[in-house]
Length: 325
Image (cartoon, rainbow, N blue to C red; front, top):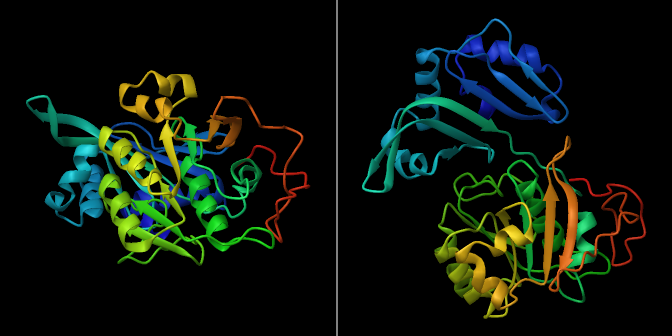
């Protein structure tokens, strides 16, 4: 947690550490709002840091630490409303927005911060494997609202697919990691375990990265986090048409909700995805709600699960981790 704690001035750092104590693995978010107490969001509860109310000088300290005293170098990220830091942690920001025409130019007077803590959870994607592997991996879309474990899930899927098992051959995996959240790469080297046969295009726009990986690294499976705009969809469809299996995530509550988005109509009209993994928000992030096939039949059987990732195979006759990420 050093990469997170170094963002705060000393008094805030000590207060947060005192409140969290030995519960770092359960901590999901640290929310800082000017003139209000600091909020700590754990897996199963929300708490407040007592006797500490951040003021503008603390906000300025945070901004300087995030930008390394140069907001200009983060201009593109500031327009998106978040900054990704070392370790793959994402810091959401809000405040006064300035616009040019109808487009966001920058966020000024940043007074709200949401530090979302990235975590590795090896084995959490095991319940998904028997649904997306049928002699080969199937084109899969992982759907969920924010804070439902999409990135955690897709990170572990990458590792499992790349390493393989006794029964399933390892695959070459290409990851387009636009926000450096999946691999948390530093100078191009992933800090999270993405498997032995994984190649990463870090800090690259998704649409460009997908085509670059197809041409340069010949992946069997391509992993992309949080697709959304028209360029992403066009590149995704082109990649699928080259014979690459695509596994990606998207913000949403259901397949029906996604169908109402104009930019996504081509992927439904052409039946690009063979599996839809729908997550739901719960006290524990990443609960699986549905696993749908192309015809939207629910394949998720609540009686099935897995215990661990040792010698996992296509049988998957184990009984735990049920629907949990």
